[in-house]
Image (cartoon, rainbow, N blue to C red; front, side, top):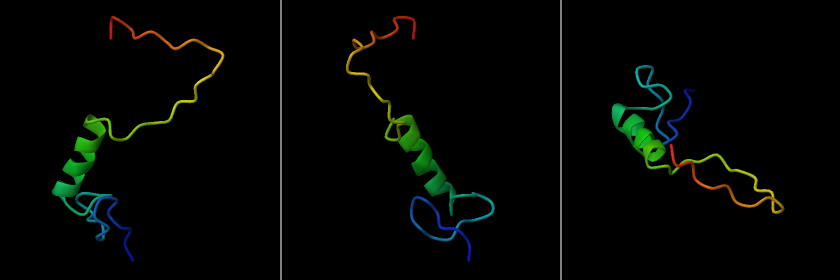
Length: 56
């Protein structure tokens, strides 16, 4: 059994691995670009919040 596409759960395609199609690959890319996926950051309650970097 082939692994499932992480977007629609259909079997993955070798051409678009780990996705089943270009559409699902594009959906995933859009989620990354819109910052829907994020790595959680642990905040230290004793440390003041960081100021945004003006050069970024």
